[in-house]
Image (cartoon, rainbow, N blue to C red):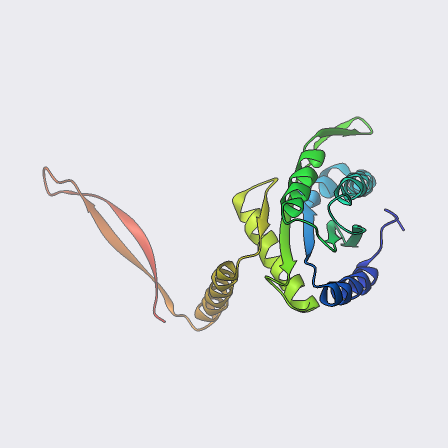
Length: 217
């Protein structure tokens, strides 16, 4: 209701339809996820009213980019999945360059200092991209690919886009396993602190220590 965009359910329906057309016509498509960098800070410091204005601003920017992209694609649809998460579907692509150009256009259009009721807000977003049939053959694979790509875009810093790479998924899964293992290690008292001396080479005197946390896994 706030942005006038389709919600998560409409997005899923549109993506199912777009995939069906792609399979029938054997033409590629792309899904672009993005969320607004530091949106929670805007909400917490400037209030939800300003946050809502920012969401509407981003929605308008995405509509503008979608209209420009349709020259190299079928009808591009824009959705707000919830919170500060948005998605675009680029169906029936004529050329792969259009996906990268769309991502760059999103970041360029958003990268502006905007004023909301006297407050100055620097807008940027992190963008994750997955494509069919290269990175996913079904809806779930595409969505997981977008999520993984967007995570790595965030790691790179503000205002970045990232294409899904299966190798990146392995990195994410390894990180998740380590995080889960560390939580268990805390509960089971598997961590211990040891101290490593720092020695002055000229005199052999101990001048300090490094504290190390070892995990007895």
